[in-house]
Image (cartoon, rainbow, N blue to C red; front, side):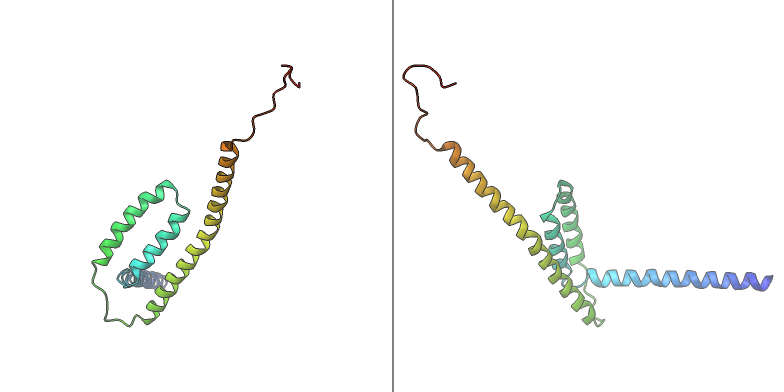
Length: 143
């Protein structure tokens, strides 16, 4: 019975250590990403995509993100590690966000063009002065 207790406490200790190691790895990765030279561009691209479909609360979030980005830009960059995989990832992600923004903007621009055309046509219809409606000389209406 004691051997079983020792075995289970040993495995739970091992699981705890593995979990802590995973958390440390996640934090290291987060620090490497946030100190990367392309991080500011990535955040700017991300915010550009969010602005296209923004709701009023997104504007408040943008102010918070800008403050967060400024804090991150003051962090020293971690140049001791080989970041080539991270460089490729950051570049690809920035490009993907740029393409996403373009794809989101196109239908929005088409919609705005359509609405502007319709607005112009309606304005022309309501402001065009045409010939006055025909009046009958007898004073009787056509009804």
